[in-house]
Length: 213
Image 1 (cartoon, rainbow, N blue to C red):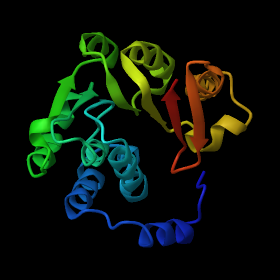
Image 2 (cartoon, one colour):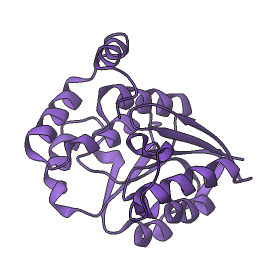
Image 3 (spheres, rainbow, N blue to C red):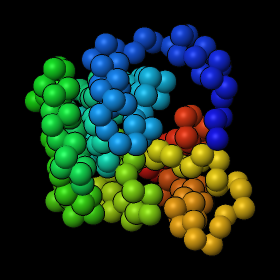
Image 4 (cartoon, rainbow, N blue to C red):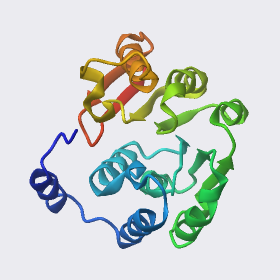
């Protein structure tokens, strides 16, 4: 499901900050060489992530699901001078393309990569997280949330991507469609959790923003 027509999406991009050339090159290479390039955040969502990070000016970001590193670089744009981002990816085959673009950026020294299941990495991370971006396997979204919440600082922000799941969350869900079932439950969990203040935005494929009370 496209929530905006191609013309409206192009108009929004034209009237937003221009996509940095490094990220445009990364997006192009991802589409040429990597399976499921749709997983890339892309221009409009990427500029949103960048601006939100700049507003927060975080010292400590955690990203669950690096893919080729597009969103990583967008989030890193808002890091404070002494800040860092831990980014977690289970697919080691993506390390080469990640490093190619991380090394061309201004943030290489601030990016800490982990190649392992996120649920094994999160417990090893220090407390006091300012900003989290969850964009990995959907079935574990509730588990990621529960693992990350105790490590968040008060007022920290948790972003969750793909929470509208191509519109399937408002359709008749098939019994074997476990991803949609999990996301419906997860969205309700975010909305009803007394520890959080949440808004679900129809950006790209759905992006939730939750603030830790």
